[in-house]
Length: 197
Ligand SMILES: Cc1cc2nc3c(=O)[nH]c(=O)nc-3n(C[C@H](O)[C@H](O)[C@H](O)COP(=O)(O)O)c2cc1C
Image (tube, rainbow, N blue to C red):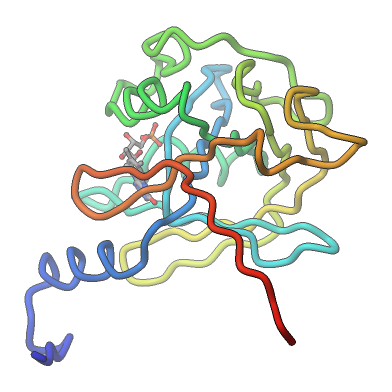
């Protein structure tokens, strides 16, 4: 067993370790619309929900070299809205393509040939083929080290009939993709544990 004191190691090393240790991570595939009306789409695996009865999600966006925010962060800060699209296996390839750093006036929806679907309560469109999407309004933001952290109140869920059984999401029908360290992703390998207590 080796010990790595964070204050003694390079930031690249700690980054690599944390990205391998916190796995698998859910992927928030986040659509936003710029003030100029350009639809942006990018994956964020620093993503989770932090409250469920009153659903709130969070994601963090690294500030780029020179202090520039990523387009997603800029759009959320300026418009207060975003949509989280759930990534399933059939969308994995296109999700990965949307991590391309395109100029702010080009849309990753078009780059990855993804169809848009209108949202109902926010401006950013949904990924039409996503089986679940969450319309969110930004309720809080924080700056932590080199990250801008955004919290979003979920206003509306969109759920495809394909994953609904008797009005509930059937986990057997949702092949969610997760992020591992390095270039790796993981797909669902369901393991059921029965509790004796
Ligand atoms: C699966 C995956 C997860 C990612 N997670 C994050 C993340 O949590 N935070 C981040 O800043 N960048 C993350 N990235 C990189 C961004 O997607 C990438 O920088 C993208 O170009 C940002 O787009 P934007 O400038 O349009 O917002 C991730 C990339 C991939 C492929």
